[in-house]
Amino acid sequence: MAAFKLVLATAAALALAGCAREAPKPAAPSAQKLVGTSKQHLLACAGQPAVDYEQAGLEYMTYRVKVTVGEGYLQSAPSIPVLGSVGMGSKGNEILCEAGIVLKGGVVEALALRSDPPQESQTTTTMCTPLVAPCLQP
Image 1 (cartoon, rainbow, N blue to C red):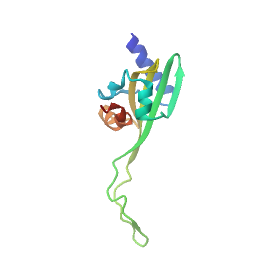
Image 2 (image 1 turned 45 degrees about the horizontal axis):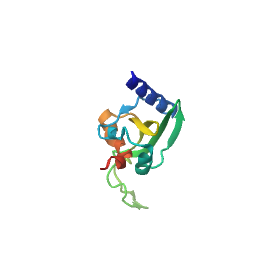
Image 3 (image 1 turned 180 degrees about the vertical axis):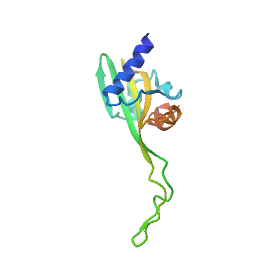
């Protein structure tokens, strides 16, 4: 029951942070190693979060990064004024990655990842785990 409340609290936190478009996905097993980590360690390795607030005795932190996927080749080729650009392919798709972290008593209780627009679970995990990767180093 406590785990259900924690998952529910995490989902509510992400919804309150403007992330209600999709349910958060569980973080990769490697990212789950952050559970039990202190807030001080998290701030030291991941830096300041984009969102940080407290509610009902829990602290909610959200880290965000934009990732470009599917970038075409020759995007950095110079443009020739008479002929135009020689770049080919698209500039790619920008995806917002978020890591939502719930802390209780200054200790990480839960971590969830999400992407916007939504991606498959494995893709979200691959793209968004780097948000907390510096904290996973031994």
